[in-house]
Image (tube, rainbow, N blue to C red):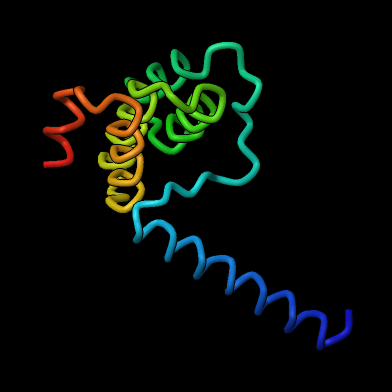
Length: 115
């Protein structure tokens, strides 16, 4: 491969990563790439089960698939936020909780988590 092409690819990848970090720091949820749970029959239930088993990274993917499928599902967003918080990803946790709050402004569990 041409050196210029390799350097260009690295630069574009670095720019993408920087944009995703910037989006996350502003409360914009950044979805994972290549999610195997997209199209799953019941990704919410799968995410809950994976969370119970302690498979947090897999649970995040399943819950992301749920909120992609049902963007107004406040419970899906809330569980996604909790899962990110348990996985020490505070920016994504806050972004998910903010989306849960948008979907259901009266959800006390979400309001307490954001407080």
